[in-house]
Image 1 (cartoon, rainbow, N blue to C red):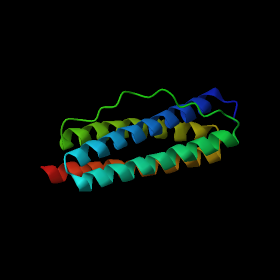
Image 2: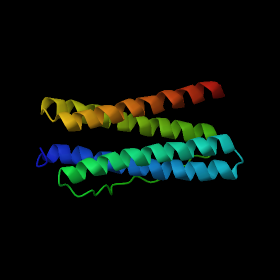
Image 3: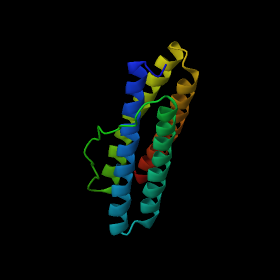
Length: 142
């Protein structure tokens, strides 16, 4: 299983996505703090901490499999110029990672890699929760 290049690729892409999310949310936390939006700043900081936890789960699984954790394909940060734009950007990022986790979980299930499938399925559920939260915040804005 550790030698399956496709599974390794999913782990690397997932780690990059989670680290990028940490950077994105910390940037947004700082920006909203500058705008005196303390509630949103706290929310973005909590989101960053949750994504950091996801990165840690991925790194731990990679170490168990003997894979070096090299999640280095980070996209540029897009902080947004308004709160609504931030939430829309974050929504798009969540949709991208949801697609990744769906694909990875499906592949791991087909390959009978139960532990990796469970990891990706668990992360998928958490990211679906993030998407629901973002959708709720966007609806409240209108």
